[in-house]
Image (cartoon, rainbow, N blue to C red; front, side, top):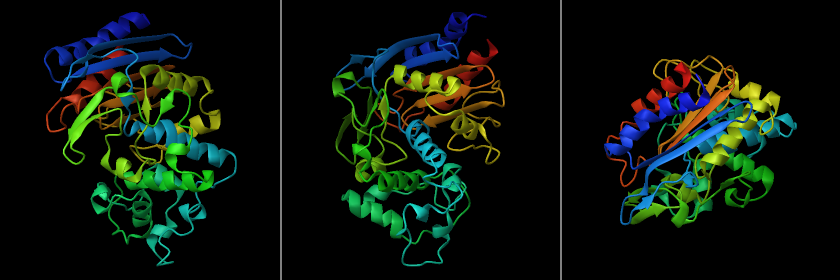
Length: 333
């Protein structure tokens, strides 16, 4: 089946989701190792208070894709340069982490454990409710006596990795180059709207949706903005070794657990990429309705960008099943 036929087949459930109002709008993109790519948009970038059409140049709040498009590559690059050791405690970059208790379990957490979500930090924590000063909140994260729990997916891991990047760069996150085609915000006239946010009291368009990232004024777990082209450029570069080094790409695929690699997810029962991915596939999703999957064995990647939280997250958009349906159609072709 040609790439065009695969794409048309994969777009069918997306067109239906838009037509039935489950998601406002969508952009789908597929790229192969040769660089051939196809993209298509449907629906609305914004429903309320005005209507704007979704286009292939719409900017998206990529949410947790920040973890794999920015933070993971930066950490792996620092390791490749010998600036950090992935198996060293993160205190090697943040020496004041948990400085009140030098025997704390937190001071033993390594870069690799944070990348693989193999730490004891809580899965969810409303950091933004503890203050509005970004510097204060960073030190709240660093000095809080976190209760140890089971290893779960936790934004705290990547908030810490982001702080490490800031310390090594000597500048705050939003003063660090986010990479080709990416940004830390977007022109509201060109961005997909996210949520009518009760905390900030406004419709969010072109500013980060994640509350903790907003309160921190930039962080390693969220905050990146991009278009379909920039996400596909990254994916194509991962396939051909230009956006990440071959060594980093190998780590991106190297299993750290049944579900995770360095920064990314790997195929498992019920995962977002569907049931037909090869074992050499990695992927990640973002809360706003974004996702990227890269199949190194097939030499193919696909990204699904939606604004499924617009105008509210408190609605069953069907995004989990939708991602799997698209992935199945991409990989059955």
